[in-house]
Image (cartoon, rainbow, N blue to C red; front, top):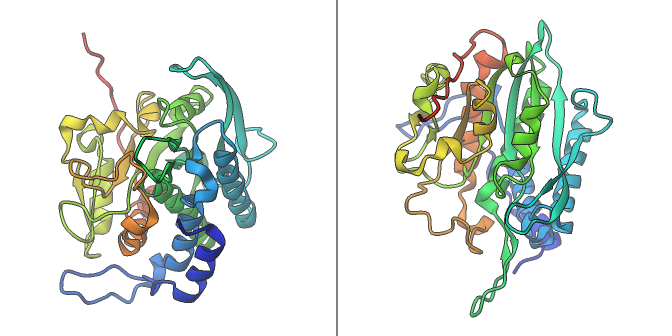
Length: 332
């Protein structure tokens, strides 16, 4: 497999044409550069996080430590501050692996961009940076589960959005950027994060998961889990009018996806926290396979989805719209 140093060189020479606007249904482009996302930077983040050097980013391994350091460095370069009394970007904790009973010390990586007029109201933008690690199987030549789509693509979006909102300097609410650990082991990182917050101060959760493939709805679309559980999705749809990009409710209701990503940990606390995705999960042959590599993903889809999230969440970030709270009905 191609190694990281070569890939980064490749990116510098053969980077994709930057996607600074949304594609329209008639294949024309707008001239609104307000929501410009640098596709070269997107590609750099994705190739780095999904490289063999990260060894599949399994929680508790040297590979995920490399990913943590990369994310920390990006937060530092952007000048983000630390969260809620932490002395670094790491929220470190220890948990017991439910399957192996092993004690694992790990960390969520958290950076904060303080708001202006509503700095005590928080919006979280998140993705999980862990994956499955190295799994050796008979007859399988590749044992590294790189997790390019799941969820290096989401973490790439978090980093790109952190840069975008930092440069915009117009967030009235405080934005908390989080790369969650141990999602694959049962939403461990996000559950730990949720235990230490005042959920009433968190007005929205923007989670990104597997945004690297064209949805079943077609180009320039994404879908949102738990669409009916708050008016978060309707706010996004309103803000996307005229962009040529559309957001749809999760079409895979039988998969129970609302509760299978880190948004669920906050939603259970009442936060209108939802996950954006583009992948047709019902037919995705790379899901949790060693074949989930960067070469299977569409960089234009990733870049345009990040732009859509930036545009779609604008009124929430600026304190104009406040999504309704999520109510989780317990089964009797």
